Length: 116
Image 1: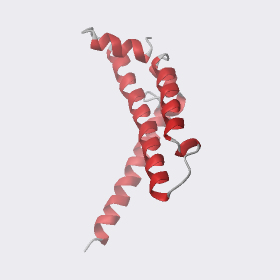
Image 2 (image 1 turned 30 degrees about the vertical axis):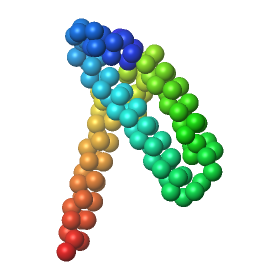
Image 3 (image 1 turned 90 degrees about the vertical axis):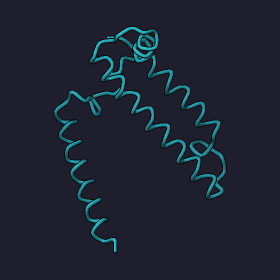
């Protein structure tokens, strides 16, 4: 299997990477986006609350963390980067997703019922 960086470079070069490579690369990129979203929210929270820019509340720290995180991901096979807890081929992961989606659906339905 190829690293995430190799899969992305192959696709950008007009190659047609293996379907499973692409599928897992999408999942790995989704995980990276989640980390980035959390970082941006932390920075916004810090700014809104006037927190001192240290560790997770520091844009410099978040920039450096993002750089290292992306570097690690790009040099790793997507399935390895995702790990067992986020492997889309795992029945346990899929069951957890089904349960989470169902719970979220119920929560949304309840919130809609409470609206006037």
